[in-house]
Amino acid sequence: MKTIAQWIRHERENMRILLRSIPATVVTLFVVSVISMNLLANKTLLQLPWIALDGGILISWLSFMCMDIITKHFGPKASNRISILAVGINLLTCLIFCVAAAIPSGAGDYTAFDGIFGGTWFILLGSTVAFIASAIINNTLNWMIGRSFKKNPDGKLAYAMRTYVSTFIGQFLDNFIFSVIVFVVFAPIFWDGFCWTVLQCAMCALTGAVAELIMEILFSPIGYRMTKKWKQQNVGREYLEHKERSRP
View 1 (cartoon, rainbow, N blue to C red):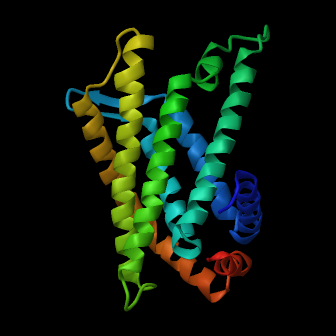
View 2 (spheres, rainbow, N blue to C red; view 1 turned 90 degrees about the horizontal axis):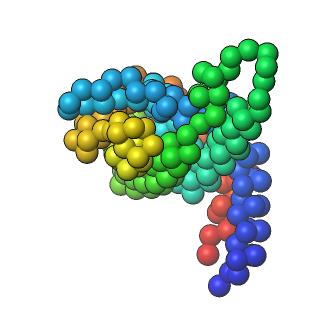
């Protein structure tokens, strides 16, 4: 049985090899989408008695598409590792933004800047918890559905089913967990009574999941072609071979 120190060394080595193996463009888009999603979530785009939407819906589909591509080629553990990396970079970025907003300046009125980039701690908490939970569920579900296609696991139907189902469920959970934490638990306390109802959270999650599923359907052919190309070009061979050697 591995000790904690051995596990940390093992994970560090896996991460080092993985970052050398995944094309930088995908990792960059993934990290940028996570950071953007956190910033956009500060704005409510729509609020009706039965539905509410925040700005994160505009970019969150890209995060899930990147996770689906990584999961398909490298496996769910690899996608989970990159998800944790993205969360860590997002937290560091938020810290830098917060410091910048806290530094006083007499050069002009930066109230709007400070309000946006200074951040709100419970929005960061909600987005972090929701994203980690939904990412793990999305990646695991994606992989399990893919393995159920025994005859043609690399075909278009298999890719479509694994990405569509996992994205819809993952997006719903991401939206719902975030909405409940931010707009039901904390917003009434810190935003002068402003809040969403649980029904609004559920409808936001459902509507967001449908919208993001549509985006996934539109852009999934790009993801499918990327995974086919990666396999043909033997992308990530070092990590895949390392993963095989590490199996018990």
